[in-house]
Structures are given as structure tokens and as C-alpha cells.
Amino acid sequence: MSFDPKRRLFLNAWAMGAAAASISSPWRGSAMAQTPKFISDPFTMGVASGDPTQDGFVLWTRLAPEPLDPEYSIDGLVDVQCEIAEDEAFTKVVRREFAVARPDNAHCVHVEVGGLKPNRPYFYRFRVGLAVSPVGRTRTTPEFGAPLAKMRFAWHSCAHYEQGLFTAYGDLAKQNPDVILSLGDYIYEVSYGAAVRRMPVEDAFSLSDYRLIHAVHKMDPDLQAAHAAAPWLFIWDDHEVANDYQADFGKVLPGQDPAKDFPIRKYNAYKAFFESQPLRARSRFDAVNRMRIYGQSGWGDLLDFTLLDTRQYRSKGACLSPGRQEAESVSRTTCADLQDPSRTILGARQERFVSENFMRAPFKWSVLVQPTIFSTLFQKNSQGDPTAFTDGWSGFEPARQKIIDQMARRRRDVSSVVIGGDMHGFWASDVKQDYAKPESDTVAVEFVGGSISTMSFNYDRWNRLFPDNPHLKWQDDRVRGYGLVDVTPQTMDVRLMSTPTTWRRDQAFKPLKRYVVERGKAALNEA
Image (cartoon, rainbow, N blue to C red; front, side, top):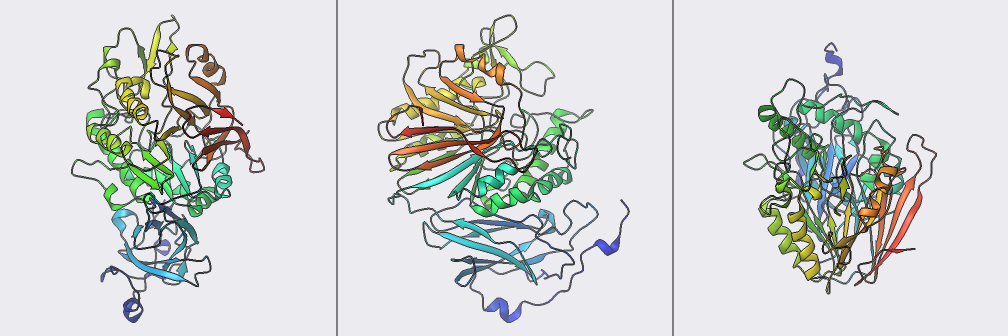
């Protein structure tokens, strides 16, 4: 594409002066920043909020009038104003903040807001000169330990841009959730071939590649609606970077050196992810180029989310074949690595965090948020030999057992539920004290949500696993959708919302299955 100077942004600097002086804010915009006059809408990616606490949240937007045009750029630093109000009409503005959009972060803005009232909704918007963003709705959480009679959350995963429209996000936005959990594969780094639309990148490697993929996602109106509807909590899986990657080891492009080039690919992917999501500054790169994504979110005395990062700190795949860059199935009888207690999927520091968070009180419900299926899958190869797929928890059984044992020790006081994604279908299962002994105690129940759009064709294959896996109770990967949960002190009402296709916008979402989990009883009750 030839360079066209007429497409560049025209800046007209002006001092904020008395207007800035009249705004109550803990910090100011940069003295070097400018306030531009845009020739087109700078808020093409909408707005988002995340990581709610009892007194605040993170607010996000990106200034990008032409986000899919690599020749287009915004010059220099740009001052951005953010308004937070108690009402959607903004007649009760309670806070105004300034942020600086910087070119080295693709002019993304992250505003960390604090000092607000607990357990109430807020509305927010951004301003740059005369340009005003769409309005987003967010909320604060209840105070720690405060009585909470009910709350609603939704979770989702696996949104391949090419394989379906994002209508599930649009339906989710209408459900009025208090918080939305994103469980990974928010983007896919690689094209699978255009089913309903085409990605702008065939196989991402550069920072520009990953930024383009995030941009084309964020421009989707259904995804924008979901981001504007409620605060989000994030974890990731593999496709934010590359299929089946493991810590600093993973797939690269043809002709590249995995040892040299994969860390570059991961850095680019992580940077684009941080730029594109409402994450706190603590999630920025540390000294060894890691980003903290795991964490905790408490909701009064009712519920606690423990959010896991199973990618960044894990050991290399068990018994990985020489030269292989992706996970594989290995023999349970000959691969000693599968039972090696020193191998980890979380890393030592995150394991300590999980243990400490599990000891927190006074929550009635504990939700373990992780990106795939937590329950074991006993499988066999074509010769009938038992195998384990090394990418998931079945490749790290001692590490999973530590978490199960912790759930078991506290189940008299706290009811545990596990949610996951990755499987491109819905699952319901029992979390067993010992999966090798079907008669052992059930310490929790698990729900895996369907994909937003990514397709699966394994319905018969998965059903053939059930005789060897009695803890698995149900699955269906023929539909797309998300999970919607209503929580009270007595019950957790889980609706698995689905549609037969995301290739058309006129398809309704309905509960495919509904389960009610009673507090104090680790059992799946179909409603």
C-alpha cells in the first residue's frame, strides 16, 4: 500500500488550561501530549472495563481511527479524559481522570480507578477533544465479607474470527451479568480458512500481526456490546500466542528457530494482549518478560473466583518427541514424566497463591477458573494402550491432585465449582478425589463452556470415552455458546446457553442444559 499523507491524523494542539485545573484527578495528562481533532471516529474499538474491586476497576479504550490500515498512524502523545458517573445520562459525574495514549502502546489507554462506593454500578466514557466514546457499564464488588444475596456471572472461551459470527457475545451482553469471565483463546493466532469472514493475518508473529488480530476482534459489534455491558476478568490459554505453547517453548513459523524466535513471538503476543485488554499495570512485563494474569476476585461473603494461568509457568510437555513443537498423546504406561511430582503447570509461586487463596474466608462458594477441562480424560490409542494428552491437566496429574486435595480439605465450609473452556463444546462432570477410583468422593463439580465460534467435530469421539470415564456426565460439541450462572447462598444455577450455528445472526440462544448445584453437596442436579 502506498503512503498517503492525507490519511494521517491532523493534530491541533491546545492547552487544557483552566479546564484541567478544575477537574479532580490524582494525576494529570502529559505536558507533552496534544488534543487532536480527528477526521474520523477514534473509538472504533469501543470501550471495556475489568478487574473490579470494592472501590474501583480498570477502564480501557484505544484511539484507532483506522485500526486495520498499517500506513495510518497517530502522531505523538494524546491526552484522553475519562468520565465516571452514577447514571447513564452522566448527570451525576463522580470522577474525571486523565490518561495519556502513547504510540509505543498503540495509543491504548488503561485507567485504574479507585475510591468509589462498593457494590454498585457505574457508567463511563472517554473524550478526546470533541470526540466522545460509547458509554460502558461497569460495577464495583461488595466489600470483603459483606452479605450478598445473589450475583450473576457469565463465562466464555474460544472465539475464532473466521469460524463464526460473535453472536454469543451479543446475547451474553443482554443477560445483565455482574461480571464476565474470559477463559482463553480470546483470539486465534492462525487462520483456519474463512468460513464466514477472513482474518487479516495468516499466521501471527510480529507485534503488528497480533495488534491487527486484536483490532479486528474489537471492531466486532457483538464483542463491543459484551465489553460495554459489564467488567471482565481474564485468563488466557494457548491461541493468544501459539497452539499448545509451553512457557518459553512453542511453535514458530517455517524456517525459524524455536529457541531463538519463539520468545520473540510470545513477547509480541503478550504485549498486544496487554494493550488490548482492561488489565492493571501489575500485568505489565516483569524483569523476565512475564505478565501476571492469575489472580483472585471476591464478591462479598458469597463467592470467590480463583483465576489460573496454566501457560506461562508450566514445565515442558511430558515425553515430548524430539523436534515436536506442539502437544501430543503419550503412553501412560511408559511415560514416567506424567507422574513426576516436580513437574508443574502453575509454577511454584502460583501454586502458593492458590493455596493461600483457598484458605481465605468467609466465602460460601469457590469457583476455580481455568482454561480447559480440569477432569481427567482416560483415552486409548489405536492399539488399545492407555494414553494421556500432554497439553491439559492429564499431562500434569500430580499438580492437579494438589488442587483436588485442597478442595477436599475445605469442602465442609466452602462449595467448590470448576469452570473451563478450550474443548469447543459443553461438558459437565464430577471432580473426583481419585479419578482412578470411581467410587472415591466427589469433591467438586465441573462445567466446561461451549465456544463462542470455534467449531468442533468430535461429538461421537468424546461420547466413546464415557465408559472409561464415569466421572464425565454429559457433553455436546455440536453447538456454540457460553455459560450463565446465578448464585445465591443456597444454590448455583448454571445454564449452558447455546445456538445451533453462529453463521447467521437470526439464531436464538436457549439453555441447552441447566444444572442446579446445592451448597454443601458436590453433585450435578439437572433441572
